[in-house]
Image 1 (cartoon, rainbow, N blue to C red):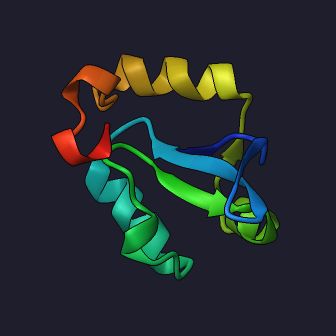
Image 2: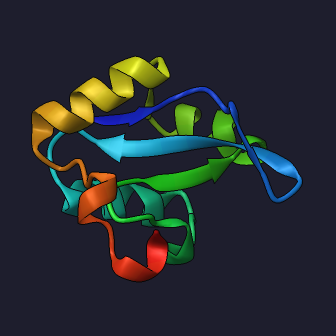
Amino acid sequence: MILVDPPTWPGWDTVWSHLVSDTSLAELHAFAEGVGLPRRLFDEDHYDVPRSRYAEVVAAGAHEVSGRELIVALRTSGLRVTAAQRRPHRR
């Protein structure tokens, strides 16, 4: 299942949501490609989604969840990349 949290993360003159899969990165990449999200918005375990695209990803089938629910689902799936695991240049 594809999940998206509300756009609450400020940055680069907009507010962002996170788009994740509770199953696989392949599912996540396929969904993102299907809605035209560029791969550059992928950040190791999620896609950053600008507020302007939020309604579009929901209309395409992403399930709206809270930020807390999204993190729990990501951890449960085993796909979560922690800060300690992130690539060195991303710290």
